[in-house]
Length: 178
Image 1: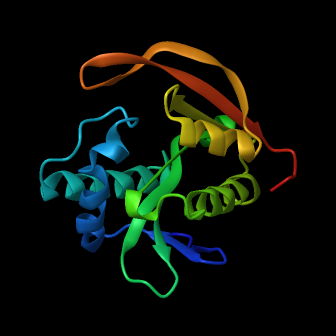
Image 2: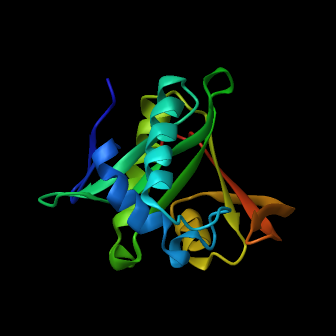
Image 3: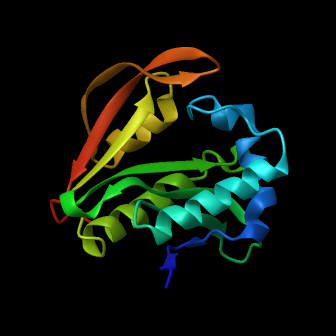
């Protein structure tokens, strides 16, 4: 049973095939993908494949990704969740994106905070990591604001548009804050 999480303004729920259009709206937007390490989507089939990937990752216990939906709204505005989930080592990496129409409204930090709490309290994680392009000021600021510590720089770690980029690597340890 896929866990549904709720915050003051958001419902975090399973991503379904009918969310493909909203996924496409995010992942076809160059402002969203420029720090994502992948090319912008060109067609709806790519979004459908991503929805299937999220589902397969969850079923195989390698990750969990929620759709971010505003309460009282229909359709998701982004996604948030864990990649590289290794239950044996009690760790995962967090990832998220939100459509630019919803930027600077506090939705991302609200969703990320809820997912961190779930990770530590329900998934028994000890460590949650994050890998972020150095130039991604918004994401770097968000992570440090909620307590992540920068551990270092991974040089030429991710490619975007055929160019290697350095990334910051962060971690948050379970200190019962969440």
